[in-house]
Image 1 (cartoon, helix red, strand yellow):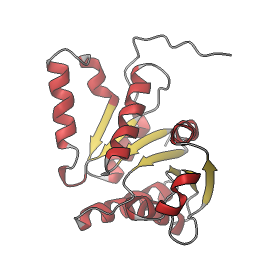
Image 2 (cartoon, rainbow, N blue to C red):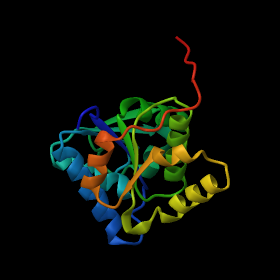
Image 3 (spheres, helix red, strand yellow):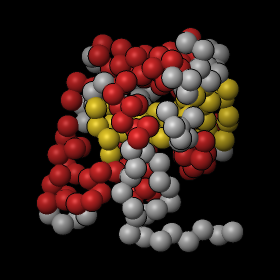
Length: 195
């Protein structure tokens, strides 16, 4: 991959009801490590988060977890997987993960995953970052979100060019290939950062 060194993966602390979800998390983790990339993730050892992190670690990849102090008892069982950075809040966690990553992938998860996904899409739309964003659409999990985005475009709430903010695939290798060459659409907002 050209400009990518670490992939931030957003996913559930639960494993879901289908074996496809955990299997895809392990496959994505293996693919990340096999490409010499590192993982940035929410720091948990349970569910989808734990599966992707263990697969990266077990295949020789670098794992960097970021977790708020208050979630440690709920999302970590046993020893941490890789390097674990403990922060004071969810806001700090999300900002730190975004800072460390060269690209983002959302996998199946719940409200937290949805919130992380939509925030990072919004940050791209606003020009806060220009990093590629992907959906690993396991078993059609994200089909309703993709349809919702199409409706929002058709109804004039999202600019048509922003449909290209997301790269969608059901295959981990294909998704990483496409993210490595993807250039997000240019933001219409000229974000001013404090020096």
